[in-house]
Length: 173
Image (spheres, rainbow, N blue to C red):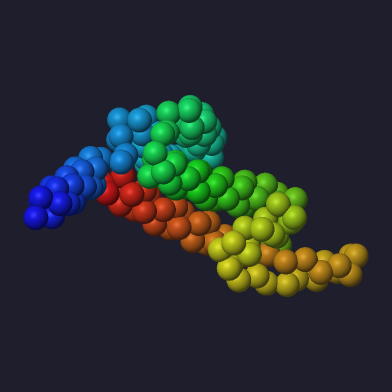
């Protein structure tokens, strides 16, 4: 009878400890405050139609904050949140690269107006976001080249917005 009582007490203690551990936050949000501010600054710049250079500066700040945050994470959940921010930064970089191609190549090739040339830098982005390409013939050389619609940038920005929602959900667990 006494053994059953001790067993019941131990089992109760274990269950209480599990409950207490599950109630303690696994993510210290203050560790991510500056990182979140930097991420939202990039989004705000994009949404406001800020110039390419300003968005690039804000992205660099996000990158710097991400590097600093790596030293502050301590739990599995915090590492997962940090990875989500890293994925967000990659999406922003993808969009910025497409934007750069959109701005630069039409000056060299007028036939690219409204299109983005799919060079080797852009190829992984095309696959990552499953962007639709169009094939063109460059008549002077007989070479074929591919392009994507300039609205493809919006697809990348939309994916970044979705990633921000994922980050928000992870931070609020």
